[in-house]
Length: 77
Image 1 (tube, rainbow, N blue to C red):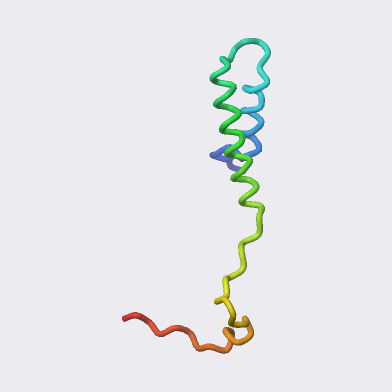
Image 2 (cartoon, helix red, strand yellow; image 1 turned 135 degrees about the horizontal axis):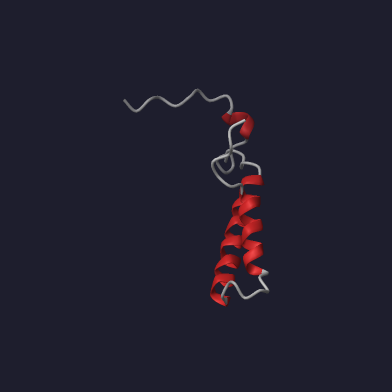
């Protein structure tokens, strides 16, 4: 089986957590802050990806059942 080319979000978050929780003094406070910011961004991306896609919006006041009976729009050409 071929090696995966990129890290998963979980792998990236694990690596960032190691930076943030560093007690050996290998990373500066600025590095830890940057890791925290990036981890938050990755968590938001993961949450957004897990969220179901929104339903197609209907026009206000027109029931979906009526809209389903309309013919498809004409092409603009």
